[in-house]
Structures are given as C-alpha cells and as structure tokens.
Length: 263
Length: 300
Image (tube, rainbow over all chains, first blue to last red; front, side):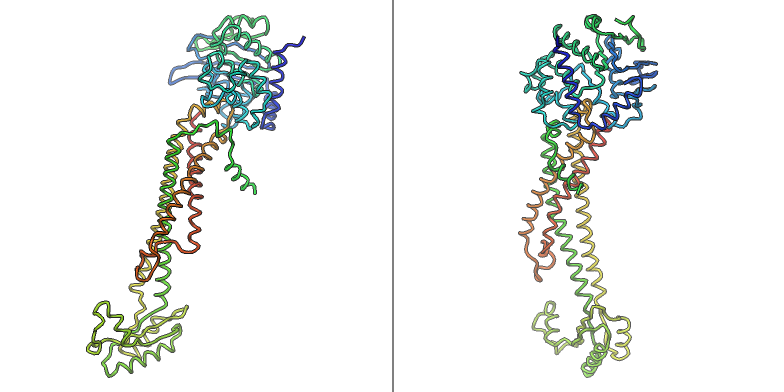
C-alpha cells in the first residue's frame, strides 16, 4: 500500500532538487559533504554571550541520515546551538564544520550556499510580512534564482500537504500559530535540504498537526535526510520512538549530554 | 557585450528580488529630491564652467594675437617715427599686419572716458599702432630692441600685463565650476549613502530572513542598488530638464552684456546635459553598493 506522506515527501525532494538554480555549485558541495563522515560537526566548541559562557567543549557530529532531538531547559542554549549549526553564529572557540568546511574559513557566499542545503524551522517562523504565504514559501527558490513560482507544482503540492492551499494568498500576520509553524516547515523543505534543523517546530500546533509534522520529518529521515529537532516536548520524543532511531541530547551545565539510551 | 548585457539585466531587474525587499517611502522621496536638486545645480555649475572656459579661450586667443605700439614724440617727428615703426613692423617675423590708428579711431577709444567732443588736436596724444600677430607670434624682446634702436619714442605693449590675470581669472572660474560639480557629486553620493543605510536598517529583518534561506549578499544588495540607481536617475533627469529650461531663459551672449550674458550652453554643449542623469545614476550605484556591502557584512 502506498504511503501518501512518503509519496509527497519524495516528490517534494525530487522536484525541488531539480529546481535548484546553481546546480553545479550545489553538486560540488554535496560531493564535498559525502567525502566526510558528518554533514555538520562541532569539535570542542565553546560559545559565550557578552562574557557569559553558554557551552564549553561541546562536540557533536551529525552524520548523514541521523536523527537527533535536542532538549534542555529554557535559556540553556538550544537555539544558539542550532545557530552554530547553520553558521549564523561563530563559536568563541573550537571548530564548527558545515559540509566539511570550517565556518571560520567560509566566505559569506559559502555560508549562503550551505544554507540552501540546511532547512531551518525557526521558533518564531521568521516570515516576510509584506509577502503572501505562497511567496514566503517560495523565498528559498526565489533567492536561488528560480522564477516560475506561480506554476510551481512542487510548491502547490507542498501547500496541499501542510493544509495551507486556501491560505496561499494570506499575509503572514493573518495566519494562526499553527499555520505559521506548518508554513515554516514547508519553507524549510522547499529546497530539499540535506539537513533539517527545527527549533520547537511543534510549539504552536495541536497534537494532530504535531504528529503530522513529526511523521513528515521521520519520512524525510528515512529518505536519508539528517534531522535535528530542538524541543522540550517529551511527548513528541516519545511519539517518535516507535518509528525512528533517534539520539536525544540534552544541554545541561554548559555541556551536551546524551540523555539516556537511544529511544 | 557582456557588460552591456549586465547593464540591461540590471535595468530590467529581478521582479522577485524587488518584491522581497519592500520600498521605504521616505528614502524614495529623499533620493529623488536630492538627485533632482543636485542635477539642477550641476546644470548651472556646468554652464558656468563652460562659459568661463569659452571666455578664457577667447580672451587668451584674441589678446595673444594683438599688440600695440605707442609712439610718443614731438609733433614734428611723429609722422616720421610712425613711418619708421611701421617699416620695422613690416619686416618683423610673426607680425601679420600693422597699421596706425586714425584720429577718429583714437577718439573712439578715448570717448568712454573723455566724451565724444574731445579736441584731440589740442592734446599731445601719442600715435597708436595696432599690431596683429601671426599664429606663431613675434619675438617681443627682439622687437623692443629694434624699436628702441630705430624709433626712440616707440613703446611696445603686447597686453601681457593685463591679459594674463584676466585669462587666469577665467581659468580659475572654470576650475571652480568643475570643483563644484565634483563636490555636488560627492554630496549626492553622501546623501544617497545615508538614504541607503536608512533603507538597509529599516529592512534588517527582511535581510536576516533572506540570508537565512540562502540569499547571497550580492542578491540582496542588487535589489537596493537597482532601486536607488533608478531613483537617482529619475530625479536627476527631472532636475536636469528643469535646469536646462532655466538656462534657456538666460539672456543670450552679446558683446554689450559682457560675461554674464554668455552663461548659457552653446551648440554641442547641450548634449553634455544628457550625461548628468547617467553620472547621478553611477554615483547612486556606487554609493548604494558600498553602503550595502558594509551593512551586509555586519549581519550574520
């Protein structure tokens, strides 16, 4: 029996990949990523904010196809940790490598290109309020040079799946919290990224939608995508245990700890 | 060819990128108004500079080719010395023509100071000889020596004593005009930089989101650069047209009116006005590019 979520996820990935504008550069980077053993690697990383140290000697490797949950109390640095993973922050000490490249050695263009391969779902979604929902979802395609947004079947299918077709022309301030969260995930997926970093992706959605989001993320993981979800929703983590081999990491005492055995 | 293609692509722009960066109203008006005002001023600075240049060239050219020999001698020797001076001049290399001014011509020269009823016969006036030089000119020192030997009462005046300061003043005026144009261009660049910085700051969140989804700095900067360049081009075009119309209403050049009546543009110089909007656009392009680079570099 055909799994509809799997079908849609696969189509999203395949068609979005075909739409990539700078194919040569992406392919080069993909090859570079495959050479190494991890897509994103933190090596004895420390990070401080105005004198206050958030992490110390944190090391982690996000191997291709891995699934991680990142937990920790509010203010422990989950969002900062994710920002380090996609090059929005540079560590105070230690090394962060994204697709085998040291973030410190990467040019701004390199980081921009790397971000096309890392889908980020923000806690506050981060939409452009003057663009419609459809245009916001297509923004990663737009900035990478893809133009035919109106006829983009992939975009339409993605909107169908997240249940936002009827809201395609709505402006972000008109959306509910759940709609914004679904839209943020859809935007993160539109470029078929190798890695998906989600910061509290189910924070503003109901249980049913959080299960749909989780199911999609698990499907994407089964197709080889690397997933990291920062959350303090233990129910979400428990719900995932029957479907995926996930590592649960906890930020505590400025260190990253493995929270018990694999689920 | 590729450069032309780049310019065309830039002018056409990327509709999606344009849409992603919302325009900020006050910077639109500020940029268009600044560019228009500056272009208007440049039109006059350009007209002043070109007019001063024409004046300097004309004075330099006309005066450099003429000289005067003044003969002061007793009345009974005046005719003989005049004849001798003309003989000397006619055999001097570099002298195209020399002729003694008539009594009437001398009266006309003095009329502005003494009136037209001047009884020249009652005054011991010197005889004036007008000398027109060839393009190569004559050797002033050599001619003076010959005149002092053969015509004791002759004094050669090649107008250098008053010609040089006049030409120098006109040259300075021309230089001031060009300096003004450069300063206006720099001021335009500074104002557009401020406006671009304001627009970039107002769109910091937009830029952050675009960076988050993989936009390169050049892509983001392009949207701002194109917008400010087109605004400057539009404003400068309006200012240039207004300045050009104002120049048309200035009095045309005339001998009686002197320098001020010749301030307008002449002939092909009108075509130079076409360059003003293009230069304004170029200044805006560079200023916005610099501002965008600096601002984007400070963002993660």
